[in-house]
Every structure is written in C-alpha cells, then in structure tokens.
Amino acid sequence: MPLTQRGRDILSRVQGGALHSTLGVGCEIVRHEELCVGCGKCAKNCPSGASRRSDVFDVNQLLEAPEGTRRGALGGALRRLMRHAPDGLIEVPARVTVYRSIDYDADQCLGCGTCARGCPAEAIEARPPQADGTSEGSPS
Amino acid sequence: MTAPATVAGAAGATPAAAADRKIVAFCCRECAYAAADASANARTPLPPSVRLVLMPCTGRVSPLHLLSALAEGADGVMVAGCLLGQCHYREGNFNAVDRVAFVQRLLKSVGVEPERCQMFTMSAGEPPRFAAAVREIDRVIGGLPPLPRSEAGTRGAA
Image 1: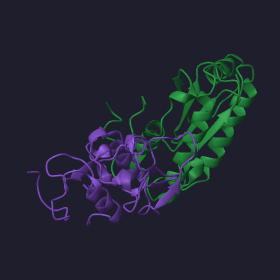
Image 2: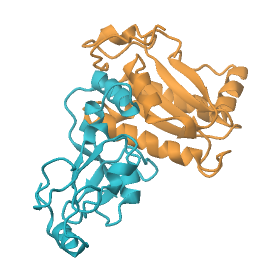
Image 3: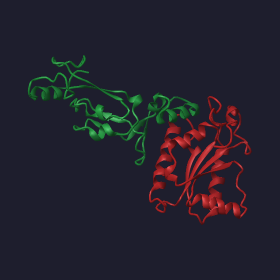
Image 4: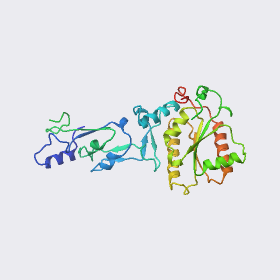
C-alpha cells in the first residue's frame, strides 16, 4: 500500500522533510487478522480513528487463529461441529467485547504506528517509510 | 465434563435416544443450582440427559465453555441463571445472555441448530421452573439430528 495522501501531507510538514529512522508518520500498517485477539487496544490508541471496533465478527477469524490461543481453541471446537464453512460475518451482541473484527480505514490512517506498538498479540506491523515516499524497505 | 465423549461416533443416525442424550447445564450458584437442588429434594423427576455444572455466576460462562461442551460430546448446552436484574453480581446474567446469543449466531453461521444453546432464567425459589426448563431443552434437542463431530473427543476422557 502506498503512502496515503494525508500521510504525505503530514510528512511534508514535518521538520527535516522525511522521517528516516523513527516510527513517526507515514508507516505502512499491515494487520495480521488471524493473530488478532480482539482486545481493541489499537482502536483505543488510534489518534485518527482509522481503527475502530466493529459490530460484526468474521467467523473465519476463529478458524484461522493459531492453536494455543483462546480464539484458536474456540475455532478448534467450531471446526469439529460445523456442517459447512462459515457464512461470513455475524452481528455481535453489545456485551460481547473480544469477539469483534476491527475496522481499519487506510484512508484515515496517519501511519503513526501507535497501534502496532500497543498490540499485545503483535498482530500489527508498522513498516517505516522510505524518504522517497514509498513504504517498502527497512529502517536505516 | 465428567462423561467421556463416546456419543461422538453416532453421526448420521436418527436423533440421539433419550438415554444417550447429553445436555450440559451451566447453573448459577445463587439461583439455578439452588433451584436444581430443591427440585431434587422434592424428588421431581428430571430427564436423565442433564448434567449440572456449578458456576459462581452465569457471567463466568464464556463462549469457549459452551462450544467445547458441544464439541466434546454434549448434544445441547443450557445456561441457567438468575432473573434479569437480580444477579448477585449485578449484571453477570446480562453478559451471559449476550454470550449465549453470540454462540447461537456462531452455530447458525456454520449450519448447526442454534437451539442447542439456550439461556434460562429463574429464581432460587422456583424448582418447577428449573425442571420445566430442562424438560423443554431436552424435548427440543431430542428432535434434532445428531451433531456432526469430525473426530472423537480427545480431552473428554481425561
């Protein structure tokens, strides 16, 4: 994913031009949904509102979760019971908090990487941008 | 669960016979378990399928309890808690209601009858209501086709 327009605007306002070494703004955010535990910290920490807890849950997230996790255990039980592959999204009742998918809106994202730093499951990667505005590459 | 998951192999047959049926009832200590106790003291006959599990509050019941009970050999699960608004821990049973609804939607999305997981509420002083709830879910489960379990329970025997 290339840098968003908003991310580029912000980068142009930052003193010194581009950010080279720190997780500042303009990172590419890569979410690994299968590792997500649904704690919602990314949504809580997100300064721009790009990550939000949604009202729906993708049942496939349970089936893809790694073994040894709570979601993985739930997925294992579900796999033994199911008659067909999940129909997809289900609505989540208000008091069920952790079994929710996270809405991530790349257009609103600043690429600050706050979500990645706060993620207890290490399900979010923030890839630092390069000086030319592409987001491929490693921190220098 | 104390019972080993031996029913697992019965897939593809007619509905589980009354004697083979297993229903796990997660009961709140403050009300439903007391109601079950009183119901037993009054010698009310209960369906032989029901297995009681004592919980401190229905708010302790997680979707994992319900689904793994079903996966490991139960034909149905019920959560029996206090009347809404009368939870000993104030709102544990509201949490349970939503979790049961969530599990029902999960089951529905993979093609399993959502009626296999149900929530009942009662007060400690209503043993007949507990017996009626158990008979009700036993009747409903008795009319459903057996669950497709892909493999026999591995943890059930432990």
